[in-house]
Structures are given as structure tokens and as C-alpha cells.
Length: 468
Ligand SMILES: *Cc1c(COP(=O)(O)O)cnc(C)c1O
Image 1 (tube, rainbow, N blue to C red):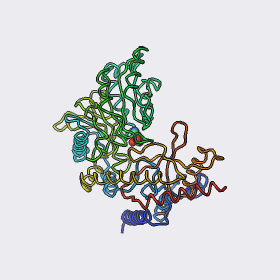
Image 2 (image 1 turned 60 degrees about the vertical axis):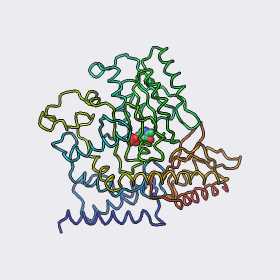
Image 3 (image 1 turned 135 degrees about the horizontal axis):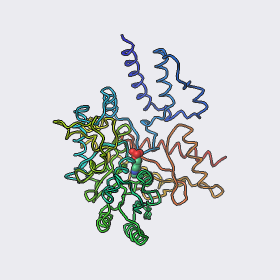
Image 4 (image 1 turned 180 degrees about the vertical axis):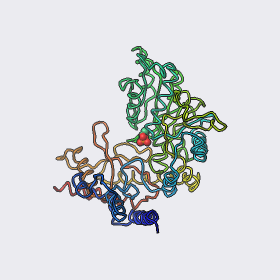
């Protein structure tokens, strides 16, 4: 056997063993160690000469043993989790055939797959004549949206910069921080982002949006963009898209929907009403590496009107890459901010083939059921308090200790102990100055018993902390 084949077949055995361990009862989500320990454990320095085959395989094993098992059923920390078999294979075949999405010539089938997927996603959103491009994440999709909006309001800015145009943009106070990054990057300025107040569910209040727009006009600003969120990062709130679209229209703003977390709810007939009005948007961010379970990253930026992306993204000087030839209409690179761009379409296309539309719908409906089960569990446990009504797959709660404890410090300490125990992983945030534990159900393989197990781990540590 050649060295290559030996390494490949042994690495595949490691993969299979790792996946078996993920579901074994005594496997921890993470073997948490501090940086000093890990640096002592693994010599990270770059060697003068290459290592032996055995050493190389041992390195792979070490990597697996100290990585967070996001496919473990006690991983509730992020908006992504689980293991996707078609997604994993898509990723391997993408690397195997390593290419760039710049031109049809370089990536013929992947280009057609990406176009098919963009069309499919657009039809779910309600963009009948739309276009789109795969991007490096939801943050990048939001950046593209703001760029398209800037290009619409200030067409001269592409060449001349924005000078002092006093643009103003609007998102809710629960929106993702990527909007601020985009405002920074596009020269619009972080202070030009106005955070509109949300209600107790975390949904943007349309009346507050209109007030904020009028105020900024009175200040001599130029409102140009409103970003609504479908599924906020902390509370899982869905902004009222129809009402926001009416205000956007009235004031001639670009209307973007950040569906990075909740966009895929459109796959469920039962719950797609949460995104009612998505077809009124000008653009939409969709992360398939969250609710659709694909390996990171797999995101699309969708736009209602054809030609928008080329207009916003192309800046000339590309003769060495893009040639006028028979199939150049298929060169997606002309619509992208990237030059070299990874093939992210294959894994999503394969995954949709594998599960079908129906399979995805069932997964999403199941996750809503599990979220409801988790919410009931919190409500019925006297030691816990639900911190916001559950609207989606984010369940926000906290442990309520006796009065002599500082409740915020107690919850942060409890969560940290849970992470270090490696038994369950969950994240936290703050809401109106209160620390909240945010449990996210994004892995459709989990069931009620996994949720029971989580609370067993959480409550046990809580009681332990109480008695100290
Ligand atoms: C995760 C998330 C983003 C950022 O997406 P990335 O793919 O992580 O860049 C943006 N908006 C919302 C609402 C999100 O939940």
C-alpha cells in the first residue's frame, strides 16, 4: 500500500471511531484544558523535516481528542450542531477536487449547482426573478446587503468613496453585530447604525423604526437601509417583516432580511408564517450551516433584482481571469467580492438530495417540538426561571438560587463549571442587565432524553454550587 493510501485508510478509521464515540454514553462534549496544558501536550512548532506516518496519524488523533464535539448530543452552545453525513462527504469531495468558483471553466458543475440552489432559496424567500451568490457566512451576506444598498443610494460612491454623505441605517437592538462591522468596513461608520427598540419578545417595534427614521431625517441624515432579523441570535425573535417593509417603502430604504439563523424555517409549512413578508425584501441572508446542519461555512446572499450584484461588486481590472467566451455568462466570480472562492454548493446540494425537501421539513418541525419540550421543562422546574418567551429554538433561562447569592454571578459560575465538566455545553448572554443561559436546539438527532440529561447535569452543578 502506498503511504497516501495507508494514511487515507487509517484516517477514515479515525473518523468512524470518532463518530461512534460521539454517541457513546460516557463521552464528554469536550475535554476542556487550558492553553498551557495544550501547549505542553502538543508541540505546535513547525519541524525542519516532515514527521513519520505514525506521528502524523497521532497528530490527527490528538486534534480530535481536544476538539469540542459539536456533533455530541449535549452540545447546545451555538446556532450550529450535529453531524451531517452528506455535508461531510460534500466537504471532502470539495477538497478533493479543489477549485475556485470564479469561472464556469474552473468549476462547471459546482457553478450550475450553486445557481440551482440560489434559485431554490430565492423561490422559498419569494424572489421570483432574483439572483444570489454563496458567501463566507451570514456576516458577509449582511455586508453584501449594505454594499448593494449603498450602491443604490450613492451610485457614485463605488468610484469616489462616500465622502460626507451622512448615511443612516436601522437595525433592531437585538440585531447581529455584523451590521456594525459592515458599517465600519463600508466607510459608513458604526455610529450611523441606529438601533431600534424591540418589544419584550425581542422583535423590532415598527413604530419605533419610523420615529427613528424621522429623527435622523431631522438631523440631516440620509436613511438608506433597514435590516430586519428573522431569528435573532439570542432570543430567536422574528421581526415583523410586512410592517417593516411598508416603512422601508415609504422612506425609500433598502430592505434586507437577516435570515442567517431563522431563514430555513421557510422550509416548514407549519412555521413559515414566522417569515411572512420575506418576498417584500430587497435581499436576504441565509446560513445553511446553522439550521440546515451543513459544515461551516455554507451561506447564501440572495437579491431580488438581477444585475444588482454585478453592479455593486465589479470594479474592473479582471481581464486575466474573466474572458469573454461562450459560457462567460456563467462566471459567478463577477458577482462576488471574493476572487478565490470555495465550492460550498456541493455539500448543500448533496444534502438536499439526501434528505429531500420533506426530510428537512420534518427535521425543523421536530426541533420546534424539542424546543417546546425544553421550555415546559424549564417552566415546571422550581429552581429555574424562563427569561423570555420561547419563539424559536433558543430557550433562555437562569437558575434561581436563594437570596444570599448574586444571581448573575451564580449563573455565570454555574455555566462555566458545566463547560469545564465537559458534560454539556451551553452558552450565555445578557438581557437587560441579567445573565441568561441560552440553550439552542439545532441538532435534529436530539430527543427528550438528551434534554432531560442536560437539566440533570445543570441542576446537579447548581445544587452543588448552592451548598458551598
Ligand atoms: C449567526 C448569525 C449571523 C452571522 O452569521 P455567520 O455565518 O456566523 O457569519 C448573522 N445574523 C444572525 C441573526 C445570526 O444568528
